[in-house]
Structures are given as C-alpha cells and as structure tokens.
Image 1 (cartoon, one colour):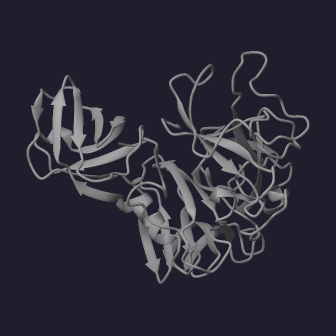
Image 2 (image 1 turned 45 degrees about the vertical axis):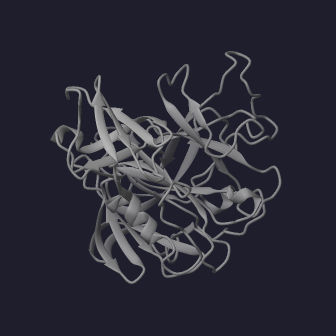
Image 3 (image 1 turned 30 degrees about the vertical axis):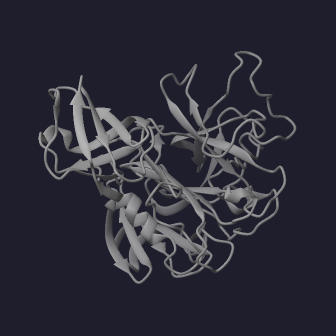
Length: 393
C-alpha cells in the first residue's frame, strides 16, 4: 500500500532494540524501513461480514492503525498489507471487503509491515537508505552507526557506495561529520526507547537517550520529502538532526542543538535541504516553525509564559498546528503528519497517548510524543502529535 502511514515502537512485542554501542541503531532501521519484524504463524484467520479476524497463539506487536503484512493465506485477497481495525485479547481484525465468509487455509503468517524503503549500500555499522516511491523527489540517507552515543547522518543527492556520494546536505563545512541522531547517554547495551512513524516518502524517528525520567525525554528527527508549497519544487528531500550531541543534556535550550522536536527556533536549527528554489547546487540550512505560534516560541505544549491554556476556551479543545519549513527567503513546505500545539498541555498528556482528531482533523488518530532535553528531570517537556492514521500526502 503506497502512501500508507505506518508506526512502530520499541515496546511492541518482538521489536528491535536501540542501545549505546556501535551498531545500536541500524538493525532497528532495517526492521522498520525495509524488512518488517515480529513474524509469527496465525492460529486461525476467519472472515465474517467483510471483516477478517486473525487469532494469535503468542504476543503480537500490533496496535490499532498499525499495518500488518499477511502471507500464506487462501484466498489470496487476505494477503498483503492490512491496517488493524481493532484488537481484543489475542485477536486482530482488518478489512476484508469483497471476500466471502470463510475460514482461510494455509500456513498463514503475520508480521509488522515495513515502510517499503530500500537499503542500497551497507558496510560495517553503516547503511544507506532511500525511498522507492515513484513520487519521491530523491535523496539518500547515509547512517554512520560506528560510534557509541550517536549515529551520524548525512543526506546526498546521489551515492556510488556506502562512503561516497555527491551533493551532501549538510555539507562538511555546515556540520562536520554529519548531523547527530542521539540514541544513548552511555556506552552500554541497555535498551533505549524509540518510536518510528512514516510513509513511503519520509519518516520520523523519536529516540530517548536516557533511561532516567521514565525513559521518555525524547528527541525526534526526520528524513524525507516535505509537503511542497510549490508543486514545481523538485528538491523537497529534507534531513533533520542535531548539530551537536546532547544525549545527556539537562538544559532547556534544546533548540540550540537543532532537533526536529518541540522547538520552533527563529534561526536555522539542524534542518537541511539539498538546494534552494533556484535549483543551484548547494545545501541550504532551513528553519522550522509552528504555524500557530510567534516566531520566537520554543516548545510545543510546554508550560511557559505566553502559551495558550488547555483546553482552549474557544472550543474546549486541543489546538494543533502544522510545522512549516523555510529558508533562503522562501517557505518551502510543511513537515508531513507532524503537529505542534501552542497550549500549556504538559500536565494533561503522557507519552504515546492516543488522541482522536476533532474540529480541523476529523477521523484522524494522533499519538502524543513527549519531548525534552534528555537529561532534564524537571518540567521542561512538551508534546508533539503525529498523525498515525494518514495519509500524510
């Protein structure tokens, strides 16, 4: 299924782990982006009234709106990627419109469906990923996972092998060694929490480097296409990460290090695109901004002066805003599926709360992700909301 949003996290049964040693990130990226994971054989698969019910014998990774990949079933229409409609005990349901009531036969398996990306080059604790979607604007993500606390990432317009590419963004002059995707505050094999959501043209990766504060002071990064402001803009591939490591940071100035989390700083902050609107070769440092807040606002949903109260007095609701990306005197587009809030909401939500969409977002399903400086044990945290129902585009 193209353009379908998929999400997964480290607390799901059978999920890959993220940790603070070399190679502590790429296995999880492989599982989520290209391979899938958590495969097991179903006890039964029964169709009744256009709904298929899959029964499992052991714990499964699926949640409502996650995508399962079914294989080995007869009739063949039950195979393929299926969005989960409901979960009860040891059963999962998905749509089976057009298939008559019956019990499927065969050795039927189910696993978490990957995003459908390709790993085009690899080396020892190194990998290069790209989207295979026809509408993708291009761009390759190189992940250097040879360090302990951070993976280092650079995007390229083209690549010849795992170490060689053309037209990097950011350039070495902009961020030497590449952006930081911080995965651990210590060099050890202790599992860190993670959450990944994306479609066939872009994905977000939320990581919590600390094991303190409930392990939920996280930071997010993005790679993939923006939602273009101008459909003739052919260079929409975007990479986001830290311009320095902050895996143990206990300060409230997370925006200074440039993570695509709750911050909306007014200066370039760790987000890069391959070219300006002129299409001339040369990486461009960008800025991201919550569309509903003043230009100098810092955190989504953080309890600081100047933010609106929750619930909103006008409609008794949660206010959500798209996040725009601009640079080179141009507003280039919007981060897909990523919503900030200008309200004081930190006391009202918990990490991975499921929030139904209302008002401007009917029939949507959002997941709240807690963001904060990883080592901060105080009140400097907020929430960003990811649309897990889709589509984003």
